[in-house]
Length: 372
Image (tube, rainbow, N blue to C red):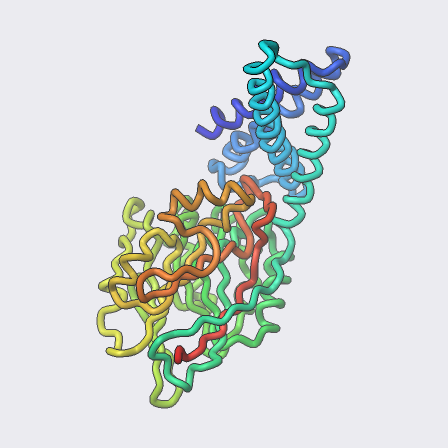
């Protein structure tokens, strides 16, 4: 599927951008071949690791692939928009207008510049995003409680140990009461990622580190990863919950595995099981990687759901398409019945399409407030 879609993008660029250019044929052939190789980035990733989600190339090569692949994607979109405009002109004039080479040059340069900028924004250690969320029934002892949400780390050749170490240092400097990780830790096997995830061992918060699985864990050996993370002093919430106490005050943090778990031989998400035994009249914070089942969580009495998965849509405009695939939830804070849902743009994103334009990554610090 990837090869078909990416091949089609390359074909649009070849036929509608490269071939009409007033260039020597040798240059057209050379550029066409370079972009053909870049368009098959996911195919080469599969050859390197057995998975399109884990390119095992040197990081500079992964970055170069993402820049060129992003440029192909953007240029194909620009070219289709240009052709659509030309068709409108043809309706009124009867002739398909010739496009000046200068306009094509501008489109090509814009695509390359935007792809380079977008990849740069994607691979940086994310900036801090501070939000406050008022929770009904929150005990005053938890008013001002600070938790940091990390999600969609996608630790990989693109986000290696040095990136993870810098992200952990930035997180620890926030001096949070709680750190939660809402899935998609890695891209690659434990054998390949062991050194890259090691800095996560240094994460610290007064009430600990709580985490759930994301869908990408199940592309690899999810069981081995979950055991490894538990050995790093993280508490994995798989259809379970924990009770955090401040004197007599209590707060529940519950978690369910990703929706794909049940299709891969693991326990499917079970919200009822996750909440079983939770103290009555206590606000529940639910960790669920994908936001699409938020309405069910609201019906179950959850106060706040924290999710990721969507990467915020990555590109402004494209986020609306991803919202449709996630029941309308893609980025930011939503009111779902009596529950609030926060969908993070992600701490990083998968290395197969590392492009951010108008949808920045975030290191999310959430301060809980008592709703008056």
